[in-house]
Image (cartoon, rainbow, N blue to C red; front, side):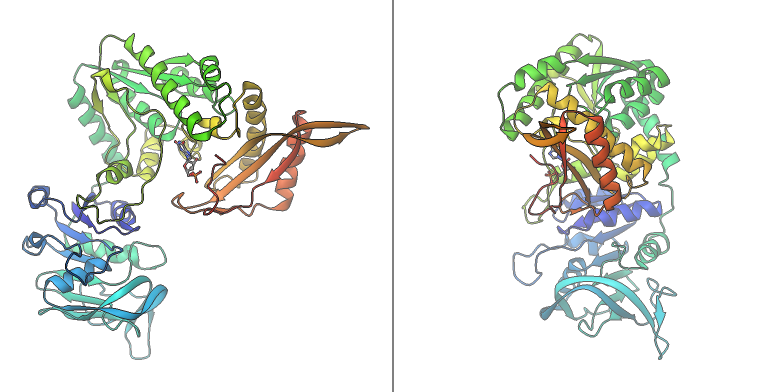
Length: 517
Ligand code: XMP
């Protein structure tokens, strides 16, 4: 396995995902993790990530000295290369120009890392690589023992290697897809140079996870809050396969789910798979609590607290349960860890509804803790969940509660569900669903005029929202075809009498957010 030390780059998780795609297990730890941890981890190779800081200056984050002494191969990427250069006696300077974006790198020399990997060959017969650069500082002098491995015009030392120690540094980012040969370069590093076998496959993950769960819980009973979302669904499928009837799921229907979602969850898990699921219809209780509340954050809190209350009540009826299973995934783990000194600028994903009833005194079972979202999805498919469920767009915990602007009412939720269902159904029919990262409908509690026959009518307005994004931190509104939008709008207005007007949201994030509240 491979250890990645994180210096705070926004791409660090991408490095890990790529390496796992190659089939090699890896973990991310903050750059200042204990030396003892590094020793115990037993990495076959270590990667130093990029980062937003400058290595020049006394309080710059540094790689633990130990990594240079373990005798395992090292790959420094961007900041990782710079700190490697600096710490081993080379020199790093502030560059006059920042380099950001596409660059062509001349891959010099015949290093193990780049051998036979190239996009083009220039007239002198040197290999050229199309890469993605993003840096301010650059290495000006390589440390003793290193040779030049790559260069560009504005960055004469864009790669360096000490092949006796198997230390490599590259200034560009092999983990982003703009670097065309990036995956091959990473594969060369982990497979050939570090000698890792490709054992990290979905089939192996299923087998290992099942064995581990069985060993952990033995004959105990396990409780799971099933929401219908990807993570808890995959946990349910996995645990059902691992421990069968020892699993009980509690599914709280807060009345703010999508069209027929509750029935679908029951059909899938209870009827098809034979999982024990207790469905709690708590719509009325949630609606009562939400009466008169128009503030988005307060609505979130009310929904979150009520969810815990209901879940708590239901689960306290199950007397034999010893474990609470949760769909925590690896990005949650990394983001809550972070660097001890707070140097790494971790971008946090935000707010999840619910949380853990604190006084439950149950042991936590988190079988997806080591997995990225794409791995969780593959696991779901391998476990027999339908692909369109596993690849569904994300849905916020508070559900339609934050898609009904202002006060939430059952009447509004019912109207919104129908409109949203039409939008999603048409997206799927037009093969546009997978082209968008998230698409939904928002209910606006204002009345707008419409003319039906000779009569004027005043009815509600909805807005369609569809975005394309990779990380949900920034997003572009999806440029859906006009004909498509026209069709959806016609269907919504004709089929849902209470809606008189349909709009399309053309705001990008930032400054707008994806949700309207
Ligand atoms: P925003 O609106 O912040 O949304 O641009 C980014 C992503 O987060 C989801 N989101 C939430 N998810 N509870 C959740 O579990 C929430 O309260 C919540 N608010 C936003 C949103 O759907 C999008 O995917």
